[in-house]
Amino acid sequence: IFLTLFTIILARGVEESKYTNMLLTSLKIMIVLLVVFGGASKVDSSNWKPLAPKGISSIFTATSTVFFSYIGFDVVANAAEEARNPRYDLPIGVGGGLVGCGLL
Image (tube, rainbow, N blue to C red):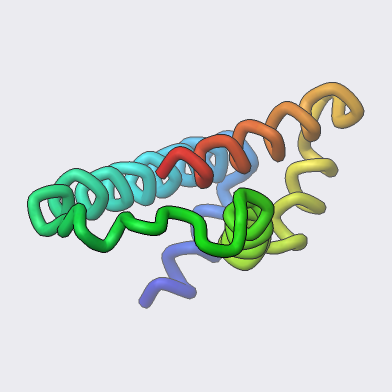
């Protein structure tokens, strides 16, 4: 069913695909925020000591691993094809995604 739906959307053109992509991205962000804020009441602060036993660099390593696992190189390549100014837009998008994943 989903394959047929996505095929129809892609066949209709880039404009409809753009709106569908925006909708799905918004849905993903809302789900992540729901999980983060919904799970906030379940946090046990005694687990925070020590916060970073292997140092701050391990946090950045884990953040980048999760980011690239989630995003995937295929999405970045597709965005580069559709961006108006990829040299300017992609570093901002990738950097913003890393910051967002790090904060969440």
